[in-house]
Length: 276
Image 1 (cartoon, rainbow, N blue to C red):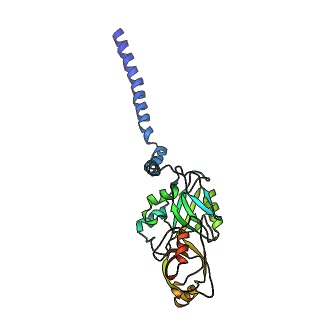
Image 2: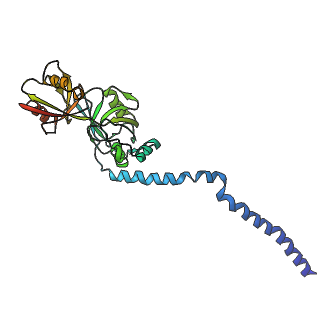
Image 3: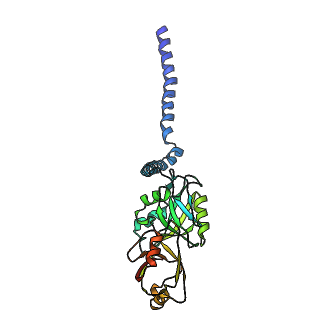
């Protein structure tokens, strides 16, 4: 009688305990595949790919002070660039993939970069002497250099003309303010158009120029009604010298503006290379 009682007790326990164990395991197995978690996972690979890219670009940039911006003839130093990174957008990636020719003379292109903070450097030296736009003198460590590393066919280069920043255009001072104060920057640039001018310097050129102290060109401020440049313009309407053109070479010589100015005042024939 005692054996029957024990056996009956074991059978009862097996029916009570075992279904609970199986039910517990079935409830736990699907926890890793609930819809909410499945919806989150597809975003993770993209984030994991982006982080090493930024780290790689940051390591490529040397620790050095940022660039300077020429404002009213004064050199204004920027803060060190830090880890600012370019932020490519879908339309930028598509433009690169399609192989559009952004190197063509006069080609306009857009870049989007982000600084670590609004006060940090964007990493570019500019000549805003014409008061309407700013000419790139050089690219320094910072977001624009990072952009150049990631966009080989839309690199920002010396003599590119910066024509707008975050929708602001037509005023060089306002462009500089946006570069210095905004963190996210949407910048439009234009490649220079190059042309040559040949004049015999046997009388006045009839042209006034100015320059930024650390620039690499002479800015044409005025073309007078009489002089060799006016004669050239009348004979060459498709390559006439205009206000805001930049003289970058005189008789095969390029360099700082004081060197260009001395060559411009020398006697004899002049062959000028200008950018527009």
